[in-house]
Each structure stands twice: as C-alpha cells, then as structure tokens.
Length: 456
Image (cartoon, rainbow, N blue to C red; front, side):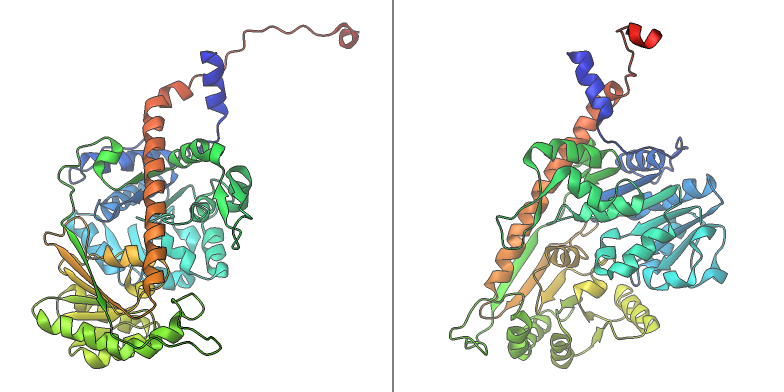
C-alpha cells in the first residue's frame, strides 16, 4: 500500500520545472529569501506570494540576474506606476546592472525596468526573462490587456509573478497567474478543482471540498506564499510588524432614501457612489481636521472617486494629487515628490497608487472613501504598514451613514484571505516533507503474458 500511495503521489498535477540549478546567492539576501530564490530559479516559471516587506524586490532582482545570464543576458521587470525608480534604486544599492527604460531603444544588458503602461513600446522577444512586479494588478487591466501580456511572453522559459495578495477573496484569481506562467489554463483549473455554486445568486465558483488538498499541493509546486519567514520554516522573530490602529469616524449626516426607494439603506455596489457623492465634502472636512491636528506627519489620503479627490484637494492645503487622467510623467513626478518627502500629503485612489510603493516614512493614512474591494484596502494600508516600518500605523476611516456594509464585506474577505494563506502554508510544509518521496521512480514488478490469440 505504501508503494501504491507513492505511485499515486507521482501522478498528482505538479509544475513542470524548466529552470536552472541556481548559482550562489548574494550575501544581502536573508536565508529565507535565498531559499525562495533557489526554488523560483529551479522551477523557471514561478510565483512568489510573499507579504509586504519580506523582500520580494530583492528576490526578483537576483532571480532576474541569474535568469538573464542563463538566456540572452537581458531581463525585464514590469512594475506599477512610479515603482520603477524605486526598483532601480534597490538594484543599484546592491550593485546590480539595472536601468529604467521607456522604450526599446533604452534596453541594455542586465535588468531593464519598465512601467506596465509602456509595454506597447517594447519587443518581448528581446528579453530572456520577465518578472511581473505586483502581479495582482493585471486583473485590474481590461481583458484584452491581460491576454496581450500573456501572449507576449507565452514562449519565455523564465517567467515570474510577484505579489502579496494573489487571491485574497477569490481563489480563481490564481488562475490568472497560472495561465500567464503557462502552468494551466484558467478554465482547466476551474474544471479540475472548482464547482459552480448555484446556491448563491452570484453563482460563484468555489473550491471542491475533497479537492482542497490536491489544489493547494499543485499551487505549492510552482509558488511560495508567506506572511512571515516562519511560514517557510525559518526564524521570523525579526519580522514582526508594529501595531496597526484603525480609527472609524462617523460623519454626521441625515440618512435619506435614494431616488426610487422608500427607505434609507446600506451602501451597495449599485448606490454606493450616489450616497458617497452627497457626503464627500463633509468627509473631506473631517479628514482635513485630522491632518491639521498632526501637521508634522506625512499623510496618504485615499479616495474612491474623482468627486472625493476634488473635495480633499480643496480641504487639505499642500496636498499633491495623482489622478488617472493625468499624464504619465506628471504622475511619476508627483509620486516621487511624496516618496522623497518633498510633498507631505498625497491624494489618490488605491487602484492608481496602492501597489508596490514603499512608504514606511508615512505612518498616517486616511480613507475618505473605500470600495468593496478587500485587495484595494489591503494593498493601500500595506504601503505604510509593512516590514521596515518602525512606528505604529494609524489608519482613519471617514464613514458616512449606511457605509457599514462595506466594512462587513471587507471583514469577510479578510477571513477568506487568512484561510487561503493557512492552506497554502500547510501545502508548502507537505511539499518540503514529501519531495524526496514523490520523486520515487515507478518500477513495475508484475510480468504480463501476451494472450495466445495475439501471439498467433
């Protein structure tokens, strides 16, 4: 039975490794970072789902160096808005050959760093390896853009995805990463491990109960997920976050029925913006008072709509805004001003600036409004509350009448995220414990005899 169990384990879906035998790791990587980098290089097409501040940038830079040396000498890192310069500084700090590029003419040997927005100006075949920084952002792109990104690098031997939140409230988002990496098509993943749950109005796809272990074992064969080095079997005592304080401020407004209804109701996806628009000025004034009470503190002021951004820019003196309609150069300049401390207050949406940036110099955030997206909330808060932050982080919420529903949805999705991380950690432990056993070759012991009617 033990032999048969081992045989069945060899038949379980696993990532086909196409990488290299990793070379020596640089001394600036922590032990757990070096181990993750070795795994990613050996797999070739892989993902690192490490918590904010655990060093995803350092790992992917070293991955790019070794992957580039194993191919044509050039690697590409695609980053969200304004993260490219930050990545370049990180690479130069440890002596890597790296540069920020805007078009194909800027490409050189070593590591090339570019914003997702400028992908059209590049020739994907000029790079031997590609790494997507904050790869969860690709689901915010239109379907055509995601397809184009996947097709552009479909033949690359070395592909890497990097994000802290691969699928915080929807396991199917892992299918986006799997398809980009060439592991399995998203629809094939759904057919194998998921079921269309018709018990709910939304008919969500959910993971089959009996398939949970097999699914996470498959993910663990091409990804590493951790919120702490302890999840990877290393000492995590030095990676403990400072306290996070959430302050809710209820804005005094008169609740009234929306047009076409008889009674005032909680905010929903359909009436959310209409309700928020009515209270934008009041919430902006409350946030301005919070900022004025701590004038020496840098603040990130998050909004969910242009109307809220307009209200904040009127209420808060000295704030700089990054808006989707701004020119790319203007966005990059404004974000660099805030990152370098030249501007004390930043106004933007999590969908624009909530990805990838390291803003440990800021320990104050305020949300004049937030959406039902748990991932946007998680990523926005983590710009400040991340490893490397030395002070308690205070996040203020300006909540209007009826907005409690948003908080309840985000809390539920946070619980789903925790369950996902636990399942993934257990799968990685199983992977480490059984990797030697699953490599046992199949040796048949039964000798079959050819039927007489065939031998004739």
